[in-house]
Amino acid sequence: MANNRGFGGGFFNSVLPPILKYILLINIVIFVLQFFFLDYITIGGISVGRLIIEYFALQPIFTGAYGVFGGSNFWVWQLITYQFLHGGLWHLFFNMFALWMFGMELENQWGSTRFLIYYLLSGIGAGICQLFISPLFGPVGPTIGASGAIYGILLAFGMTFPNRPIFMFPFFIPIPAKFFVIIFAGIELFSGISGGDGVAHFAHLGGALTGLLLILFGDKTKLMPFLIKLFSPRKRHSNAVNDFYSQSFRQQKQDPRYFNVSWQKPEQNPTQKRYFEVEEESKPSSRNSSSVIIEGEEITQRKIDEILDKISLQGYQSLTEKEKRILTELSKRL
Image (cartoon, helix red, strand yellow):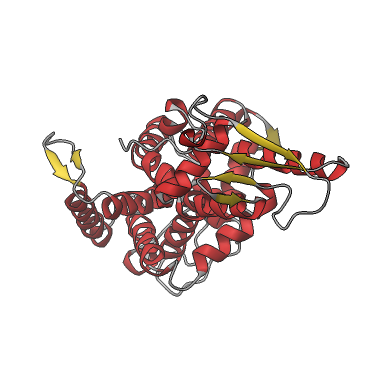
């Protein structure tokens, strides 16, 4: 497991990061409700569980031979909702286990917003392939499960950690992640062409293909940065450092007196290891009165926002050593 806990994180958050945790919980809760409660509730003689499958599973656009339109039950939201439905306990277990095993480090590396967008888009791409490619090889029915999105996660893991050893059933010998992905993709392609087993193999391949396109071109086409900024505007940052300094600046604006706070190096005062030098200003100064000085640089709210945006867009590991030290120093002053 990558040693990346993120600023202010802990071991639990690195093992079960927030978006991954919520995805797991949503899938589990929906499964429990559907199989233990909703299947036993009826509306007009039809179980609610069956209605959920009818309206929220991915219904085929083409039935029977390709070109025979039968998409009266297809709705566009099904491209997302089908990802959170499962056909049985083992279906749910293996999908969630794979999601946790391969998605944990990706969210820690990328940041939660990028991870969520990548996951959902991989699932949508998987659904589109299931709608238009699978009918070429035989009749298709309703599709459920997170497998397509998880194959996108698997592809991303193989590209991000290509030499990470993975133990593959039934051989139980370490295989580099890049070969693991290639082997599984080959199995899915062969199984999809063979058909007849009731598994949405082309959805799996579609999820991996969508993930590949997002990794190769998502940033170059500005699609991923646009979506990340769209769903994580700056004002939504909940980082403790950002909240603390925003509150401090508001208080300073309400206070008739202003202070310059600077961080002095130990050699400037040999009798003290560290101390704050606080100077009350009687008149306006050329330096921003609400600033903090770290390593000789004025750390403004704008600078803090830039660092937080960088974490949101690219993950904590994208920070320079100086930016990491800035966050560390700021955390010590909370």
